[in-house]
Amino acid sequence: MRHIDNRLRIAALPGLLLGLGCLSAAPPAIAAQPPTGPDRISLTVGITAVLPADVRFVDGEDAGEAPLYGDGQFDTGTLGAGLEYGLAAGYGFGAFRAQLELGITGQLAYEGQSNYTSSGPVQPTEARMKARRLLLSGFYGLGAPGALHPWVGAGLGANRYHLTHYTQRFPNPDDPSGRLRRGSNGEVPYTSLPPTTGHGFAWMLAAGLTVPLGGDALLDLGYRYTDAGRIGTAIGDIEVVRYNEDGSRRLLLVTINPTIADLHFHSLTATLRWLP
Image (cartoon, rainbow, N blue to C red; front, side, top):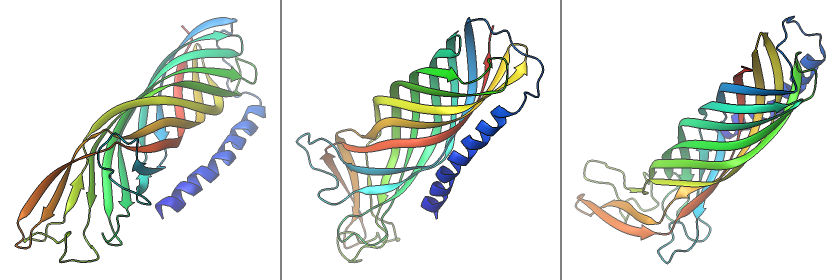
């Protein structure tokens, strides 16, 4: 159902943008208009609703250690919805505005399933991720600067992420008395991946609508598609927790190659912009 909900959200986005475009054709309901000189500094604060994103973790570059997944195996799931907070400073050149923006993403929860051979039909996985994104962006207004009008934008920069609490569990293996047997008190065997901080190239495309609020204040409502590059775990030791035949716990440390996943997501933005 989660994947169906994601598709419904994404399918609704073109209709949202079409509605914004129709609004822009209507006469402005707000009489007050900000000064519209050709060159102006702008300061922006905003909040972004990040929509759920499908993610698939696979083996990364071979660093001479053991692969975690191997051929045909992976971990696929969804990075849940969350909020991102933004700050930006820009400079306008007529209808065009260049902007340096910082986005700080709150903790997003990942839920997925791995598909290791003989580990059972249900292999739930989970993780947590935070990120910061610095972009140099450009926006172009498609109407009168002092009136309700649509705009388009694009940007590029870098994404820095922190991935933690990445755990894979095996509650129902094909052989309940084999290598993935439970502990004496029903404990489920699991594998824990190392926490990782990394960075990569990011870019975005955006479209939306500017609403004058009077004086020097503007409200920008928009949609963004963001390619946040790759996330994953670095080379390091995983904790493999298994249970002996007598139910006692056994901990193994195994050094593995990196894992990677491409991160693309959609988001809805609301920002307040001042023209000091």
